[in-house]
Amino acid sequence: MAKQIKARIIESLRLTLGYHKLLLSAEGITQLARPGQFINIKVCQDYEPLLRRPFSIHRIKDAYLEIIFKIVGKATELLSKKDQGDYLDIIGPLGKGFWIFDSSAWVPILVGGGIGIAPLLFLGEYLKHLGFLSIVLIGAKKKDEILAEEDFRRIGCKVKVSTEDGSRGFKGKVTDLLIKVLKKGSFPKEAIIYACGPRRMLEEINLISKRYRVSAQVSLEEHMACGIGACFGCVVNTRDGYKRVCKDGPVFNIDEIVWNNL
Amino acid sequence: MVSLKIKIGDLKLNNPVMNASGTFGWAEEFKDFLELKRLGALITKTITLKPHRGNPPPRTCETPAGMLNCIGLENPGIDNFIKEKLPLLKKIGIPIVVSIGYLEAPEELILLARHLNSLKEVSALELNISCPNIKTKAPHQRLVSQDPVLTYKIIKRLRRVTHKPLITKLSPNVTDITEIAQAAKRAGTDAVALINTLTGMSIDIKNRRPRLSLITAGLSGPAIRPIAIRMVWQVYQKVKIPIIGMGGIIDMPSAIEFFLAGATAIAIGTANFINPGVISEIIEGIRGYLKENKMKDIKELIGALQG
Ligand SMILES: Cc1cc2nc3c(=O)[nH]c(=O)nc-3n(C[C@H](O)[C@H](O)[C@H](O)COP(=O)(O)OP(=O)(O)OC[C@H]3O[C@@H](n4cnc5c(N)ncnc54)[C@H](O)[C@@H]3O)c2cc1C
Ligand SMILES: Cc1cc2nc3c(=O)[nH]c(=O)nc-3n(C[C@H](O)[C@H](O)[C@H](O)COP(=O)(O)O)c2cc1C
Ligand code: FES
Image (cartoon, rainbow over all chains, first blue to last red; front, side):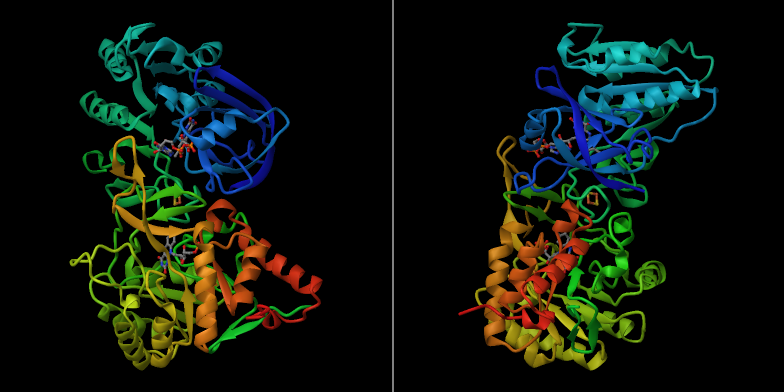
């Protein structure tokens, strides 16, 4: 079930250079949303840009919905210039979210690379609500690009940070941090990885999940023309052939994906 | 009350607005956004004889006022389609037009048509001889609909194996669209659908690579509308045959343009991606336009371009 609504912008916030947050009033969508799902936004009335743009649901608070995004092109540029009180035409919630194992036998490890942290806060809060505290690994190139750290801490998650230039936390890739955490092996329970980030990071996580025998779910990105399963444009190669990221995903079990032949 | 009813051969439609092939998923993707039974007819994705994977991603990208796609006819093949998809489509309760295409040889169309001819759930066939996104063994081989002789021959053969209304979908990638439409008419097609996508290409200057996997791809959306209108108008002038017009329709005014140029019916493609309830809005919009202009019947609008 998805809805098309006009969502009012409650707050527009610059996070750090090149990153932005929007808080939307999205009654109707918020009640239906699950972690890992996304919304599809028409950023302007006219043809430039023509198509909607997909954004993960970062957080839900009552009838409010948050997205965070990186400015990379025309649509994200326009979005970052929207003001409080403006309306956005949005469709959501779309796609299949994360599968949640409602059992205390699992320790969730959330791994976000760059803007890939976006869907994981909603997941972390949802898990917290169910009574599970996650370990959260946030990876960034440098320290000002670490996103949502405080939000995770506030809900009591155990947060570790990595930066590629070593300006904060662990120096290196977030996947190396993940290996470090898994190697410690001090879990009394099974771990499950929930990851979102650049393709190369997810490929790495695939290898890690095999090596350490941890199950993992990943949220994928593909170019989307429709976001609702209509165009068959956003496919990813899986063991059962091509699947639509927008409809059959964006979250997939890591074993479903044919990683060496995307 | 205004009447939106039209007829294409033996195919009777409650209104002249349908989806364009390949832009409407399996229809169920749209049920949250509009009442499916309001469509004049539903046109399926193009179905081929064998299941087909389609092209690797990336398959779509945005271009000025339009988009490129190289989906490449991903579909489950005729047998799975009939078993799994057709029964669900039939339940909607509107005419179902099955789009058929070929991958290797145009002869596949004959087998497909024979197969579908006996199914009462199928109201009509749309012949897709204009998909620019299939990798043929000879890459520069022309599409059937780029050649009047091939177009004539295949339709002639199809006419022998099916009584269903036959709509032939034409490619705009030709010098003279009327020549192809004329050939299709002479061979016995009941209608022509125009236009399929225009072949285009886009390059990412950052990595200096083509944006899409197939390199070239089909352009659709508002960017192609003036070309589509021109072609509908040219065919309407020269060939007496019902035209299903499409290419860049996104709202009521752009829909009305097509009727004025001579289309009997219209199909909506790319606009469904932007506004999944758009078909419903366009149907209401047309009704409103007719009322406002004191017309009682959509037929008064067809080809009503003032000189
Ligand atoms: C399910 C899903 C969830 C997403 N969630 C978020 C999110 O929470 N925050 C966020 O910042 N971004 C997210 N994205 C990516 C976001 O949709 C794109 O950054 C955005 O569409 C770019 O639009 P633009 O017009 O600004 O850039 P464009 O001008 O369209 O593109 C600029 C550059 O970004 C690349 N690009 C565009 N779209 C995508 C895409 N879908 N995947 C990969 N590369 C792309 C282009 O190739 C180009 O190089 C998500 C994408 C998907 C598919
Ligand atoms: C993603 C996509 C897939 C398409 N698939 C098909 C197809 O399978 N068969 C076909 O005949 N046309 C196909 N088309 C072409 C459309 O049916 C239509 O002719 C074209 O897009 C122009 O209309 P529009 O500008 O309203 O989209 C496809 C178009 C798009 C954008
Ligand atoms: S974006 Fe159209 S099917 Fe996924």
